[in-house]
Amino acid sequence: MIQINNNIDINNLSNDKKKELTKLLEIKEIREAKADYCKYVEYVHRGYWKRAKHLEYICQTVQDFIEGKIDKQILCLSLPPQHGKSNTITETLPSYYLGRFPDKRVIAVSYGDDLASRFGKRNKEKIEEFGKKIFDIELSPTSKSITEFDIKGRKGSMLSRGIMAGITGQPADLIIVDDPIKNRQEAESETYRNKVWDEWMSSVITRLSAKGKVIVIQTRWHEDDLTGRILQHNKDDAMYINITCEAEEGDILGRKVGDALFPEIGKDNAWLKKFKKNYYTDEGSRTWLALFQGKPTSAEGNMLKREWWKKYVTLPKMGLKIISVDATFKDSKKSDFVAIQVWGKIGNDMFLIDRIKKRMDFVDTVKAIKTMNSKHSDINSIYIEDKANGSAIISTLRSSIPYIIPVTPKESKEARVSAISPQIEAGHVYLPSYDIAPWIEEFIDECCKFPKGVNDDEVDCMSQAINKLKNIYADLISDDENIDDDDYMSYDEQISEMCKCT
Image 1 (tube, rainbow, N blue to C red):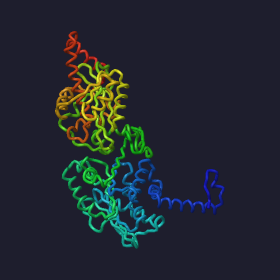
Image 2: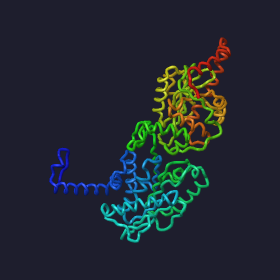
Image 3: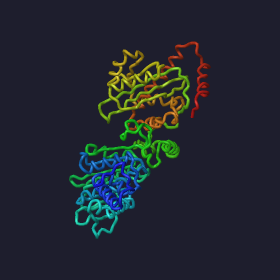
Image 4: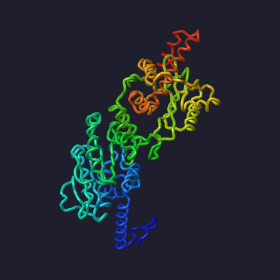
């Protein structure tokens, strides 16, 4: 057997040795393709499939799932559009699965018959070209349809259908549901979402064999889409993986915050920056967060409006700075976020200067507050809600930070937000522009969907800060007899000079 290393010049080999080498390499490729799903995808696409970190991760996860190494019945995957999800899974996995398990049955489902037919066609072609070579399987001579075909001499088969077409017949061992919702119009229709869920319950999940598996692949449109409902009703049986277009903190692939997902095909960081900016302009942040970040949100609430916020590019010198903390921590990835915000005030106007939003335990929360306090050395006060987790933080930090002020809210969350909405609507609350703080759209989204949204940590933190700042300003006026209205008017002039506000 020929050993290949960097010191061998293949051109020096005889023709017979070259043929032997070629044959051995082909055998090696075939064996690896049979054992490793990622190598199978690469092999059958012959250069038309680009290896990428997220696709390798998906391939390994899917292989572990179908081999029973993941103890869940349902695998939900969320990926942005045009990032290889269907090509890697739905157009390829059934052919691999039937090769590995030729007596198993596969069903592929999508929003329409045409797309489902394409999935069937692509898998049938792969079995015709590579099935015998890699797995020693062939299609039945009677399998003429691209939407329904069988494995010759075995029990295995594949059926492809649109989700509304109805799925009948024998139980399936693997069901793949790829984009059951076509567009925003369908996603926003509660009636249509209910129809999809009804089909899932009556036609899809009922066709699953006792030890069968389901893979649901979606570009997310709505928090109440099929994936959302599965995670609500079948969360103990489901594993959810969300791979974002733009890397966020704690990225599942280990990317740096802000990194693009698919630089291998030219969708690098430069592309991402330009594409995201244009997409925000055309479609808005809500659609971006849903489709490309896998974070669908509720429709906006009626308390805080998107158009009320003012923006700044250059921050003026503040007359007063505070830190506001909303702390909820548990040893759980599903707990609420801790929100820490730095706010400043000049005249009647309040400015969001900095913020942290992250799931943290007690130790990390205390450390984050200290870090934020050190980063902004001219902080006047730190406001922390004096109950539950906040009380413990106050006790821990008070000896080292004397200007911590406990807060005991007396009104509901909605009442506290209602109390600050006039300041925001009147244009007295400024946020950093997207150019200097790309995270600001996530902040605005949470505020604008309150109280309908899933999370309200940043809203609570903000309302605490603004409620305190507006009252502090009133106190300053009454305590300083040398300041008159003309002096306060100069603050507005200073803001006009120092800020490029929108």
